[in-house]
Image 1: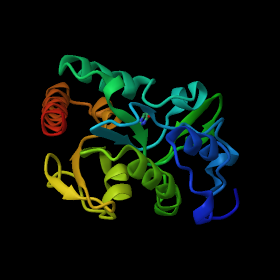
Image 2: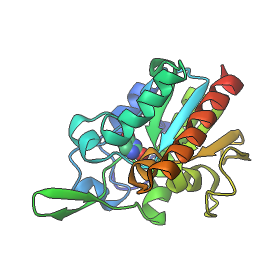
Image 3: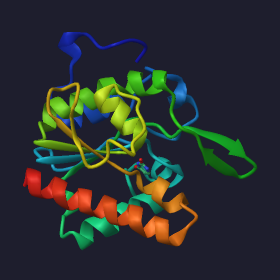
Image 4: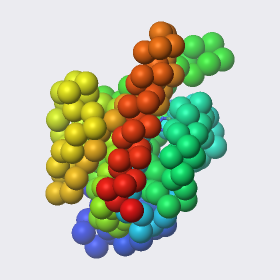
Amino acid sequence: RSGMPSAEELPRTLADAGVAAAQCRLCGLCEKATQTVWGEGAGDAALMIVGEQPGDVEDLAGRPFVGPAGQLLRAELTKAAIDPARLWLTNAVKHFKFEPRGKRRLHQNPNRTEIEACRWWLQRELALVRPKLVLALGASAAFALTGKVGALSGRRGVIEIGFHGGPIMISWHPSYILRLPDPQHRAEILAQMARDLSRAAEQSF
Ligand code: URA
């Protein structure tokens, strides 16, 4: 697709939106990525979790949160007795952004323009799922959902109001946790994310 869809074209179901997103041309990321990674889970989920973008593994698998960061998130969900099938799991940006480095594809953060372009799809997901609460993991998701760019340290665990008019809880991104070099610090930050997951579930289910 070359521009914004007209009102008559608005996808009315998550499945239709996913099909339309697979053809998205709103930014340039579709050119290098393997495929659009659409959200998955319960279409009427009370809690929606939004990450940054698919990683290398997700880009190939076509599913969100199935690579190393996703495994960390899913392990924490299991510990908190939250069934991922009850959630809507998605990303702020639906294509993998990377820089080829030999045989590897190195993750790159999506820029503001890409996040803003992809917000069209995130808004569709919010309008169709109508979650009670959205948990934003990391700065890209927080920006996509609130439009605010501030550092996460003072914002995590706190509720902000998203563009859609509903509550957004902000937490750490699992990839950020995986990259923390100091094991003790990593454990502390992971415990904070685990607490946020539990509180988000308590407040929505
Ligand atoms: N990181 C994300 O933010 N989302 C995914 O789907 C995978 C890794």
